[in-house]
Image (cartoon, rainbow, N blue to C red; front, top):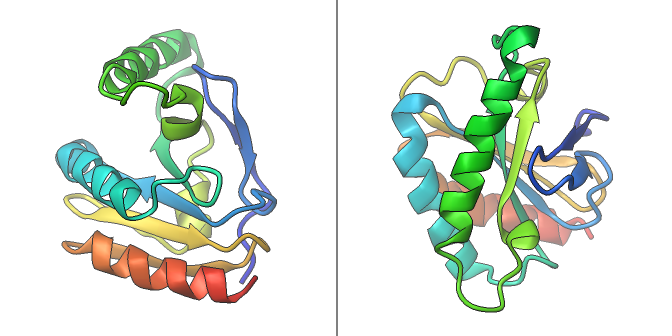
Amino acid sequence: MQAPDVTLKSVVSGRAINLRKAGVPLVLVFATQATTEMASTFRTSLREKYPDPGKLTIASVVDVHAVPRLKRKMAEGALTTRYKEVSGRLAPGQEPRDYIVMLPDWKGEVAPALGLGELADQLGIAVVAADGSVAGVYSGADPLAAAIALIGDANART
């Protein structure tokens, strides 16, 4: 299965990522309000295992399709605030644009296209290989082990 041919753009850094043409393996993280802290811990642990952002992109996909058009600036402001909070925790020399990738999904189309249903209190992830194929998706309590296995599958495809 190929990843959706969708380009998402970070509100803060302006970095745009086409899910099918990222060029490196891509881990997409889908958190809900209930799993925000789990997502943060997951991203940190995964980045410790794969420290080079040039070899693996970790991106949070934020489903904001329910935000009315008139309130999008408020949603963008919230993402900007979170970006600044997280960038303040980076080690010296780490470029926030490379390490903090927050992609609003204004249409709410990415998670369903990848086969991730209602997440509620589950963290969802999807791993896309550099060739745009979906290595797999996971939702549950142990996303790190699943991500590591799926990244191995993604790397085997290149």
